[in-house]
Image (cartoon, rainbow, N blue to C red; front, top):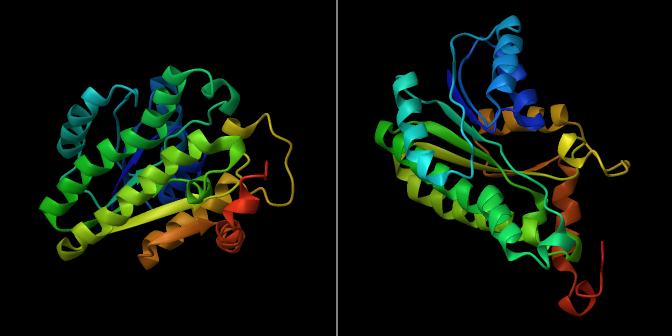
Length: 244
């Protein structure tokens, strides 16, 4: 299987790649830090991965996304799985007084996902085969006071994936929205951890299961489906007063 991972240096992407490497698959890895990509390549080779191509990219340079997709097509004859797994966690208070920061975060967590997913979807549509899996967040289910810029970007991505799923259905292309909850990773290192926190490895196992079963929207871990059902059910009269 040929697996393309964008945002390959993220904790969830690394954990997923390691599981797939043990099955002997081939990879195209893309991320901003070229040195970190090389380290991941060596790690995956030790674990049993086949051919690996490295394609560094700064996700903010959206004008380079088409070049990346062209290079991906050149690196592998066909694409079986695309995993888009990049993102950042903005400082909500800073965003409230800095629109340029808001715009940057919307690009990283939202519009860059749309750009890459749309371009790669066209490749999968052309070959009439493959799976597109995108890591979004439970934060996109409702705009909460502490992180509504982040949530708005993730909601944009999830809504886009819903429509894309229907468009690609006649072409044997499957679209999966992976919605992690609280994940213990470098991106959340400043937060105190509690019982609801999961490891990147737990989320990675959910991703592999979702891909194999061709699921649609996956909460990771699964208890977040119930939690977000409750959150979505809170009336606005009460919800607007909550600061969680």
